[in-house]
Image (tube, rainbow, N blue to C red; front, side):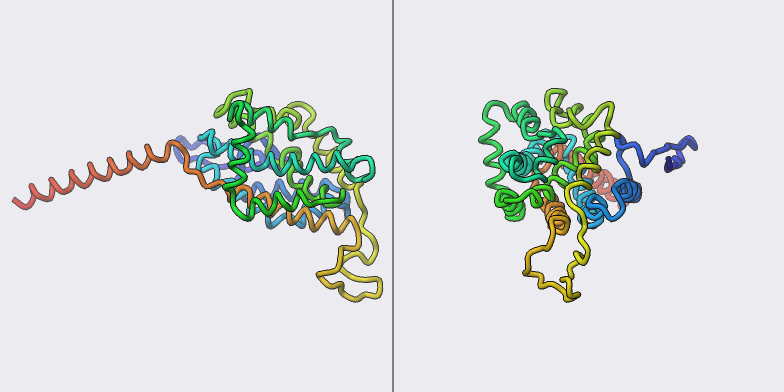
Length: 305
């Protein structure tokens, strides 16, 4: 296990941050280390590793977008937090309902659901807490005013008809909670919104987190295997047209996971609300500036006498 030591000049103390501890917030470099170490947990040449490599760039962008959203008030303003989870709820619940509808005829859906996750109802409990009895209307309004990119992503999930497509979506929407930062987010959400608004994290935090992550990776690697000559080439070695359908579920899942990671980013970008406290910060800043200018103006006037 590796760790990063950050020296603090005040008091010559040092803070040790462990990149493996997902209950902590990490720097961009530490996040990259965690991402690569997680990637290596998948089978060599397996589906999990391939999907992780496919989303790496978009995932880095997601971390930056999330950092900007945190500064905007993700964990300090309930209105911002509930708007974010409302959008992710719609995307996730749509995906899960389609999986359930296909589970009897699609082995990939059956395997994914065998993990036992159903985040839609957990989102709903939190949205009920945060919006009250009219939460469904509130969610509809949020989707209606979201960006074209966010709505397009949700429509893409609505149009999915195969387990391979839905697995690509689940890699991003479920993976963010099971593999990603759910453990780090929960205490901050609880501090802001209360325990009753933390149902989303119920099945992905606490004892057994390592085992849950390992099981997700194992199941994902079992969904499809890479076929020979499957790397965008036909059996005669000729390159495929980009317009041709993908030749295997393996390739399809990889492609959809990359698209859905970008779709997740669109959901984050869609949230434009300013935090409730911003007007007070701006008012204070204006007050300080006015006082400073008054002081120096008065001092200048006295000096000129």
